[in-house]
Image (cartoon, rainbow, N blue to C red; front, side, top):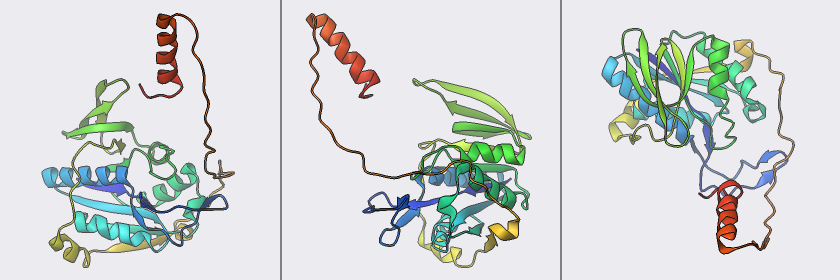
Length: 254
């Protein structure tokens, strides 16, 4: 079973971010593997251990992205694909999906996995768009994968604690929900082995993909903090009902 995992490199969670134009200033911050993608990678490695085959780690971005691919190789991926693009941050989800789809089309894979969304933009669109461009069936919010004969039984997370079981043919594209598994650490043996594994280099130009943005970021800014006091009137019962409504629909804490 050959599985390709799309992995994005994102700013580290504890990075001191500063804004530069319509994106963050990258010169003084660290980067790491997108957390939702790490769950997708782990699921791919578990499927390989159970069914055989290979795991391919693919990432799009500048030269620094190779470090994230090497991390995936150290954890157990068999080979990597780096799509070099210094301007990848300017791509919208459709543009990103077009570039990745062109690279995947050159591979023979049974399954494509992505994280549900990225920790930086958080659009949650690339995986679904990728399936459409590859003309493959897809499913989102996956919490369990049981592979059978040319098909899968999938557990999807819905709202309000509900789950759904569906069947999906292979090949397919799945977006993986965080928490589906426990992510492994790279071992010393894995780190040493990763040095001998292949990372194929591609460019957007070599893939023949031209991208016209369908959406763009106009401005990034730090939200203004404000304080507001509101008095709830009525009887204690009425005031309590109003408070619960505001906590649920405005503050969204219950």
